[in-house]
Image (cartoon, rainbow, N blue to C red):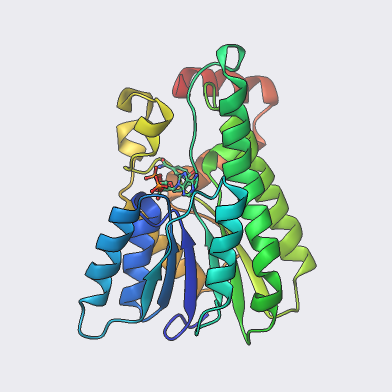
Length: 260
Ligand SMILES: NC(=O)c1ccc[n+]([C@@H]2O[C@H](COP(=O)([O-])OP(=O)(O)OC[C@H]3O[C@@H](n4cnc5c(N)ncnc54)[C@H](OP(=O)(O)O)[C@@H]3O)[C@@H](O)[C@H]2O)c1
């Protein structure tokens, strides 16, 4: 897909991978419609991106995507503007670290809704407009954890497994239409994700951690090359591929040793 001149919607654009992706797409000449809850960070990013001499158009609307009214208002805003979206990036997400037995029902619900239900409902809401574009794309930011048992992040990993599974079916259902799907699986990325989830940095093997800029650059290449299913880096790809080939009991033992 040629990115220049397209319009992309990015959820979770206030920081981390979403913010880096906004910068990278703007640099490639893509117009942007951004959202997240943090109004100040969105305003600062919009100002930074529009200050460039060759700046594409950038607009932002703060919204808590877990709030049904706010999510609907955001969709209406993004779908009724001057520039209809060509790309929807479902990037907003969060985890909550801890053993399942001691988890709170509110956290379970929040993680499932944010990582699985919200991207599904946004994809459904944007589908008619995307289908009316000459060439459009839904990008679902899943996780390597979708395919690997991850002690302490069970609900998050299961929600991302749902997102990857839905993406795979959409790839099949939408084949031959104007709308394509990219399911992107980041590995460990240096962002607020871990601290927001209550994980200590020691729980993530340092050598495998990538910067948001590197992950965003990989994601932009995947969009340009019309990839449908990819990872942010070789380590994540290997972990998923090798993990899938191992007997389940060995997979579980390795996950307990490496990821605890
Ligand atoms: N970091 C990793 O190691 C890693 C690995 C694999 C996959 N991922 C996935 O990559 C995506 C981006 O993560 P990240 O690493 O960039 O994490 P991050 O720095 O914590 O960013 C998460 C983004 O989601 C937004 N968000 C969270 N809750 C929201 C809500 N209720 N409504 C609207 N926006 C909300 C946050 O903005 P506000 O707080 O301003 O709302 C923020 O912009 C997520 O889907 C994550 O699951 C991350």
